[in-house]
Length: 36
Image 1 (cartoon, rainbow, N blue to C red):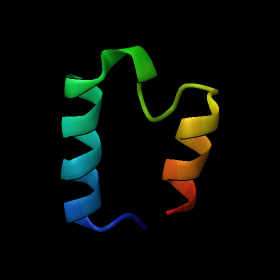
Image 2 (cartoon, rainbow, N blue to C red):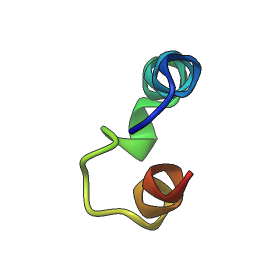
Image 3 (cartoon, helix red, strand yellow):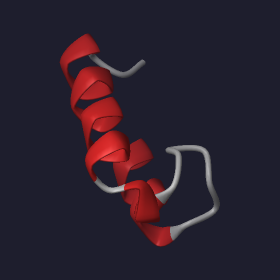
Image 4 (cartoon, rainbow, N blue to C red):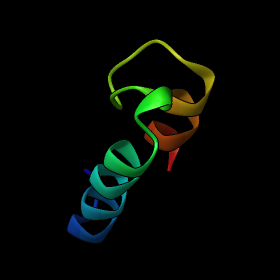
């Protein structure tokens, strides 16, 4: 489970840095975010 604060922060990151892609994209940064 991901705390709501983390979800909100992640959503903001997605909007601020669209280059990273969504949290479900197969990218190294995404894997790190999911680990948190």
